[in-house]
Image (tube, rainbow, N blue to C red):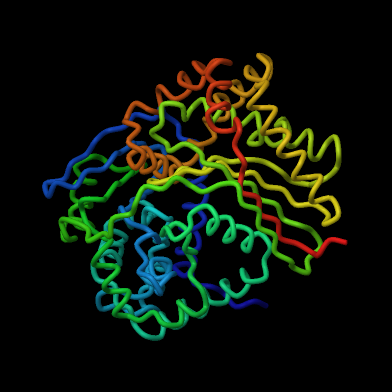
Length: 441
C-alpha cells in the first residue's frame, strides 16, 4: 500500500490549491479603490475585499529592459529571474523551500519600460510572506550557482528564438522600426550577452532600478488600510529615494521598409508595423475601437473575415495596439503558406486601406462597442487581475475613477471618431513589412 503522508505535510499543497481557487474566484463586491499612504510615504491603491482570505499585491518600478547597457542585453530579464533565487541569509534552496512551506507565490518580470513584481498569499501567512518579499526586494544574494542556472535557462530560450519564425520576425520588425533605440534590443538578450553578465552587473542594475520614486503598487484582498501601510514600509521604505535611470528618447517608428528572411519552416510568418498611439493620446479609445473592428476582434474582425474565412489564407490573423512610454505601434500579423504570402500581405494591406478610406458601418461600430464594454468585466474576475489593473492604471496615469468611466468612454466613440483616427493612423501610410519563411519558387 502507498505510504501514509503526515497530515501536516499536506498543508502547503492544500494552501496552494486554495490560493489557486481564490485567485480565480470572482470578486463579490464592486471595485472601490482606496489610496493608502504609509508612514514612510509609500503609496498604494487598495481594493479591500474579505470574501476570501487572500491578498494579491502587484507592483512595478520605472525602468525595464530599455535600461540594459549596450552589450549587456538581457540584464534586467536576468535580474527578474534571480531576485527570488536567494535573499538575506536564505540561499536559493532555502528561499524556495520557505515559499513552498508558506504556500505563497513571489515573482518578478520585466517589460521595455517597467520592472514588475507580485506576491500572492493567504492571510494567515501574510506576515511571513511580507518578510520574504522584503528580503527579495531589498537584499537579493546573487549567488553564483543560481545565476549560472538562470543564465543557462534564458540562453536556452534565446537559442530557440534564433530558429523561431515569430521571434525572428519580431526582432526584424523592432530593428526596422526602432533602429538604434533601446526598444530595438531584445528583452531576453542573446546567448552572447547573457554569458557575460555577472553578479556585479545584477547588483548594479538592482541599485539603479528599484527605487521609491518610480514605484506603483496595487493590492486586492482581505487586508485593511492600516495593515497594508505597515507592509508597504516593511517591503519598500528602505529602497533608494530615486532611481538612477538613463533617459530614453522619444521615438517616431520608421515605416516603409520590407524585410524578408528565409527559414526552413512550414509557413511564412508575416508582420506589418505602423506607428500607433500612446496610452495618453486623446484618440486612444477611438483607436482601440477601430483596432477591434480591423483585426482585434478575432472572429468578427475584417482581417479574420477577409484573410481566413473568405480565402483560407491563414489560421490566425489580427492587429494589436502596442503603446510604450516613448513610442507606439500598430501591428498586424498572419502566417500562411509560402506561395500565398504575397497574396496574404496584399489582402491585409487592402483592409488597412479600406479602413482609412471607408471606415466601418454603424452596425460594425455598435457591435464592437457592445463587445468591448460587455467583456470588460472579465478583467476583474480574480484578485490578481484587479491588482495588475490597479498598477497599470497608475502607470498610464488614468486615475482612480477609470474603472467607472471606461465603458462610458468606449460608448462615446462615434463613427466620425473612428474614421478620423483611421485617417490619422492608416491613410497614405506604408507599413514596415516583415516576412519569415521558406524560399518561394
